[in-house]
Image (cartoon, rainbow, N blue to C red; front, side, top):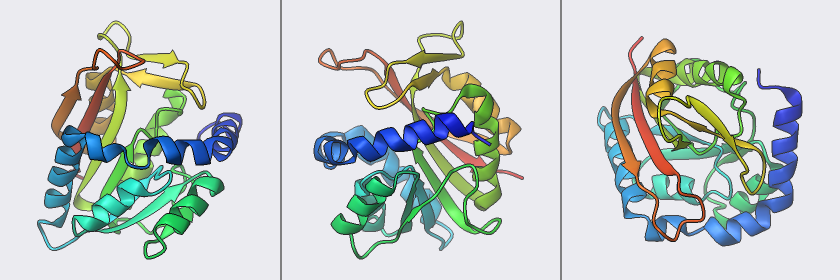
Amino acid sequence: MVEHDAFSATREAYDAAASTYARLFGDSLRDSPLDRGILGVFAELVGADGGGRVADLGCGPGHVTAHLDGLGLAAFGVDASPAMIELARQAYPELRFDVGSMTALDLPDGTLDGVLSRWSVIHTPPRELPAILAEFHRVLAPGGHLLAGFSATDGPSHLTQVFDHAVAPAYRWWPDHLAGLLRESGLTEVARLVREPLPTDRRQFKEVHLLARKVW
């Protein structure tokens, strides 16, 4: 289980920043064609076998959950921050949003066709991440897909690296290292998208989306 102090501190920080976060990022997909593209691929794969039940874990103010719903998925959001969930419910009253923790999801085994983890594990201390990946594996049905987004380190000499995120301390990951942790959890990489930073970006970090499939 993720350390209680780290979890509580992150939840409280996002509660305090919820309104600002929603204002700054609530329409972030509008100007992110690559993000929309990988979400579209994820939605097509998840729905290919007639499924489509997806949990957006770390959903924040709910805009990405709503995007997945618009792509035809039965998407619902989960976030540790009650303030974020309240904003999501206000903005998208027709969708389901729950307060919860990625370390212990209130879901039966194998009930999801997809899990979206979009920058939701970056505040997790590295030694605690395998427990969260195991929880993703538990709730996914066989053949289900995970799409994980995160900031990447600059090379394999730094498998993980802490940085000063605006809300709470956060970690970058070397993509091959994270893909290895996924394999150990029973999730095999299908594809990855790497976005180079723009010259105007405050932090010159690569952004990575790893798409993986539950194989056992």
